[in-house]
Picture (cartoon, rainbow, N blue to C red):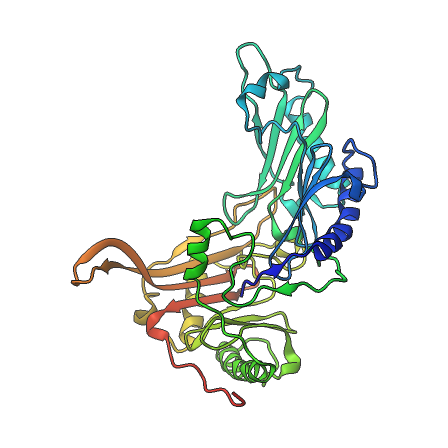
Length: 418
């Protein structure tokens, strides 16, 4: 559940003090032109992250450089003379120059910069072929700037983006958009105050549209420690039953000692639990809606390293669909109920470099037309059922199942100790 904090000057300064050494180290490794270490006197502004549990924000330096820090690492920087983020077209003549690097040299420079930061090329998928953009000519004038991008294999999305000055052979911006580099955030000595339930956070105030959207969010229900303990216990009963049906390699019955993290305030909202075994489960509307096994690939954040997912295709598409359907049936769901008697939508990781990630993601869904107050059909398309299954075709196993269907909704379990 997303919560916000009140950012005081004391808390903001504590966060800034904690992340500046990381920004200094980043700047030194990629040879950015500034005094090292970066001190508080070099900071012109700091926009502290207001999300609970997120340590970071945007740092603006007096020399015009900007840095982003989140999820435990420096996720990007931008020089004051970055061309690809230029807002004022009148400044374009400032960028004219002579191109002194070809495309291969620019790609090699980008890869070398990644390595200077201590990251493997595979972690950001830079072992594959990049997308290369060079600024267009303005008449006879050349803008010697390259933008080098590598995509991640789940979809055609950018994993890392780098701007290079091809005249001076310098970095001008670098942005990491993959969760593969996420780390534990630094410890902060100041405990921030959480924004009370229902109160609009400061960064939303004054923006009518954002305030409107915030008020539409369901109000979270505060739970006492006693209620939360009862919630965890009831959740584990449901998880144990689910795991037993799928014959997951989890020691049963589960106890609170098997829980590493838990999110949820009541059974009226989504509840998620992560076990010491690495398995994750989500609950909503009276039933377990999702399970995610360790080393699932399509879950948003990988475990271990990208290399851990490399393998061979040891299952055909037909065999994988049979495994997916059989697993859903083990949960007690029928083909007609969740529409998985139909042909699924199939997704596979894009091949990056020379290595293969043998995963299938099968999606079965059903759409209906929306209705107006008189019962007439509208143009609105509503997905009333969705079932998504990830299959590891290398190890022939199920890595995740998501089921969303209003017909599966059940009354919430009664909690002892409420």
